[in-house]
Amino acid sequence: MDAKPEGRSRPLPPAVLALRRLPNPRLTGIGAGLFAAASMFVLACLDQLILDGSATVFGLLFLPVSALTALWVRPADLVTAPIIVPIAFAVGVIPISGGTSGFGGQTMALVTALAVHAGWLYGGTLIAGLITTVRKVRLMRQRQRQRRMLLAARPAQPPRRPQR
Image 1 (tube, rainbow, N blue to C red):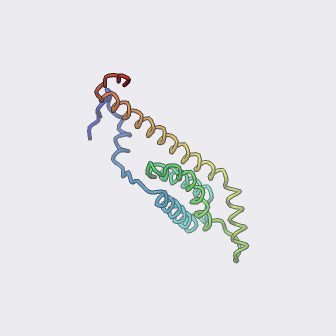
Image 2: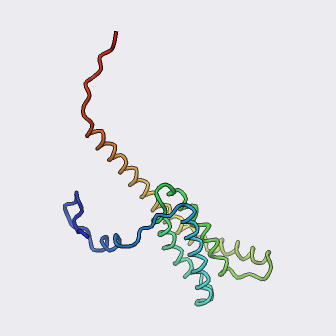
Image 3: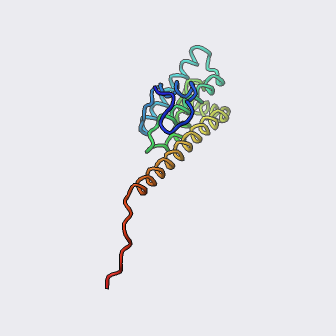
């Protein structure tokens, strides 16, 4: 890969070049939701098995999943990422919430876990929101640049004379 892309006067840092070599999937809104929810559920199950349901580890793992969801959702579905990640957090917190047997006990444990760990929930949602906002602004600027280039490439048309 070229270290000096077109239009750049200085080479890109090695970290940026390494990031560009990573996979760059474009998930639909539903695909991103399934990715986030499944990832958080599997990570929570592993957390429950290995660390007996550490909420801190779960929260720390939620942050990169939120970032990846926001990075991998396709441009047409950008608005879904900040909506998806809190749902994925709720799905993932089920295995580590504890609770007694029965629907009522499990529901109360889930609600309590969501309330107690709201900081992680807000943090991941904020990350997803910031990433999607930056992506949307960059997309809008890119489209604006393309429009300007198209207008500049058009031949100038003489002004029309009014017909009588």
